[in-house]
Length: 475
Image (cartoon, rainbow, N blue to C red; front, side):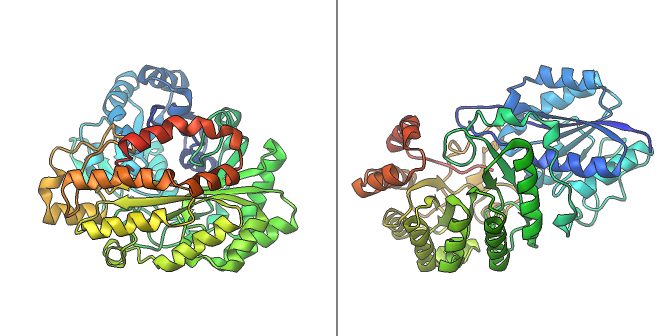
């Protein structure tokens, strides 16, 4: 096939509500995979890092003479797509425009509506984009690519039968294309880990979450696939040799799902004397932790992790499909905290059928736990989730007027529970105060936070939470 010029863009703007920036591992993984298989010239742009305007991106596409422009984004930034794709189409009328990312996974075919794009990939991108590029280079159509969403010459949006194919052997994937970004720029910004900017490397060591929480998207499917411990360590050593990175962040949905893999990784990291500082900002599953796993992780360098409780009511745990063992979760948090791991919690308030008693139980359980910090989010039903489908069927009026685009993690106001709005949001505000104004917890934060000199940085954030609460969780 002829050599194509492929521009991949992580679309988004840096905002006060969304200040964290991490390397765009999605498009970096796509680039690494595709350049091994196809004759391509590839450029990557992270709009949030550069804080680039739409005009900047269009100019970059024109200067690059892109044959294909791939745009990946989260739903809160999807408002940028109509103008961006329209201007790219005007400037490069022959270019193929492909959408991807969590927004497409959530919205499906509707992601192409009012957008000047040709195709959209609602899931894992490597194999699908490879087939798209092959078809485009050969002048063929897209009807043969399973699960693909595309626009035919008449403008009709087509959804192909089947499902977007997944890669089973993650060890077969090349290392993400860090050479196509200015990695050092990312060390100037905060990441998903609540720590000061630092030299680090980010990793996805697994894909697919086997749990069936009704509020989550299903970008990588429900079949858990993971890199081997040897592959993880090989990549860590590779980036250490180039960038000197000792701090590593794993963005897996559930890194500790396979306890045997965790133990082998820890043992290998210790044997190789990697000297790591490990963080899990996306959360590890707290109720499947054991003393042996915690000891191994700490010995390997674990210093920060998030643990997601969501709700402390067993009935709601069953309703949301997480089936968390709450007592074991609290034991897991306790083990982590007592070993000096700074432990951050995720809690959700306002599930359908949730009562005042349920709210109080979740708040009291969270405030009585050994968590160092936490966020109390309001449950938000996003398109593409089972929760959204249930609300659409039972309480469709709750979804009227919601525009999911241009939303931050804190400003979608919706109440799916059985209590009045004033009660839900009142309890949410009081929960933040009860949690953070506990003298014992404040002492534990001061003595356990790895960089105490940086804590004043969070005073404005804490003040805002104490005064207003934290209202919503976005995708």
